[in-house]
Image (cartoon, rainbow, N blue to C red; front, side, top):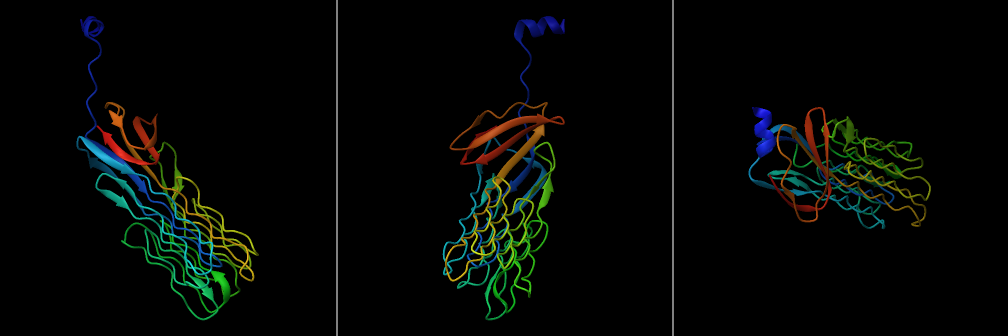
Amino acid sequence: MLNNLVSLYGAPALPKPTSVDYLVVAGGGGGGRLGGGGGAGGFKTSTGFSLGASFTVTVGAGGAGSTSRASKGTNGSNSVFDTITSTGGGGAGSFSTLPGSNGGSGGGASSSGGGTELGGTASPSGQGNNGGNTVAVSECGAGGGGAGAAGSNASVTGTGSAGGAGSSNSYSGSAVLYAGGGGGGGNTAGSASDGGGAGGSGNSNGTDGSVNKGGGGGGSRDSGGTGGNGGAGGSGIVIIRYADTFADLTTIGGTLVSAKTTSGGYKIYSFTSGTGTVTV
């Protein structure tokens, strides 16, 4: 009887989802010139978030790396899912603008040899960690903060410092590390992982943070004011998932770019750029 009814009237419509698990990662901050590593974008995740009839999504872009000793790396842009906002990562300090900026994770400080400079603060709290500080050593940058750890303080030997570790999330269907801090520039390059960019050495540029991982850009190390721009922060990402016994989302509007996959009994929507309204 049931099979006959299905053939006559079609399968019943799936119910709309009423709650989701989410990951919201903001854009990472840009690295400094002769400076520190950018801070990672804010990292927020939770389960069982209640949905209304529609919600907004914005995927934050990474901040630009500094191209001048007189300017810091630019902060990353916020990422938004409905009422949840992750704050863009703090830009890193450069040679003449020394402290790191505040952000989801704080940017690393730069040092011109004049004394201790402070990394940016993770602000608001709970989304990341502080950037590293510098000491009275010439032309060396501290690491940007990451979602999982603070950026490393500058080395007294002038070696670029490591960016802070990121955090892992598996809502995409496999474990991925997001929101690592950028490495500071120095006599040798500061290291980075988890989406952050490595620092530069000599006259080299800092490395950009990875796309859709929200890592900070690496700081550069220039000589005599030539060469060595800071790396750009990586763009963020918004991921939601819910049980595949519920219907697909109805419309995805604006400039949003997204992909739907299924894994482990979930429907997974990954929003990788743009902004717009989604109808449930």
